[in-house]
Image (cartoon, rainbow, N blue to C red):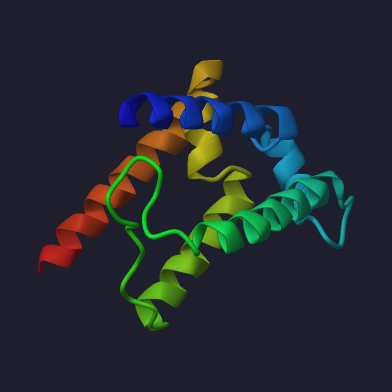
Length: 136
């Protein structure tokens, strides 16, 4: 049952990314171009996501456990350090440069575009490189 719920959630998330335009690099780049031809259309997506999350989070945090598991898996570390800031900066630069982030990148693999495969391949290589550096 957990796998079915995960699959349905993933499909709904992918559909939402596609419908909202988050998988179109020109839309994302236009949204990030504040001083050029700014495309405000993704602002509605962000406001909607933040509003829904804020409401649902208030309901969920009152529960003892999720519907299909015995406990919540929340991050234990809430410390802001240089690694977090550096990672956030690299993520932001990559998002702005490529016009796509990991979730929409994976969804966009279905398009068959070579640049998306290069993006996702680079993302996986970066994760592997980070894992190798973390071991040392």
